[in-house]
Length: 239
Image (cartoon, rainbow, N blue to C red; front, top):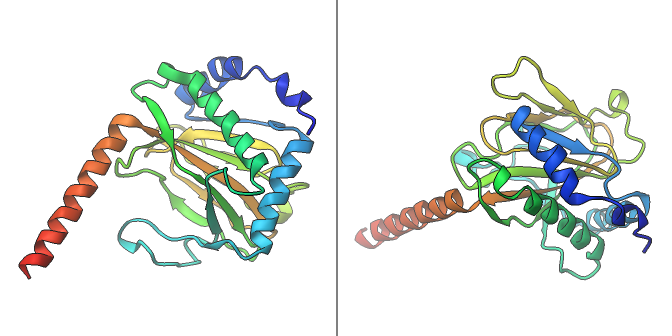
């Protein structure tokens, strides 16, 4: 697998001189031509296989509507990948590079201390005009601090295909439209600073998302969840 393009990337320089300043200044940034065509194609082919094999399921809604699929609100189909599954070597390689970028950001992410992330969420909008209404990834302190999305759509024309990710940066006088083009890697804060939406897609649209967790907020969220479960079990026993 030719890795010449990637080996010439100075990930530490990209993290410190581009990602960190952009996150602090405007709350988001993206890198184009991240993996290069050869490796990017390997990731895309595996994602297409997952889709064709029927491994993707309707995305669910969080919060009070948890577990409920409402396609007019969220129309993607998803699955979760750790990277160690058979045939997912290219995905694992991509995740390792993103991990290194976030690691290099280190203590420069303000109050955040990142030491873990989610699995990768592989998502497909099937091109039937569905999108994802305006929302915040982490509105209630679940630990997610950075959202990272890798796009996989060749020859994407947003005028024809739609599918733009529109970000509404908090306190800013502008909106940001990010086209989901092949080999583009996007970063943004996961909290209320970045409400965003996926506009209706009229062609098959693939993306892969990982979330990085702030250690302290994640621990607190897990503690609250355990307490909630404990209270629920106690209530059931009393009944």
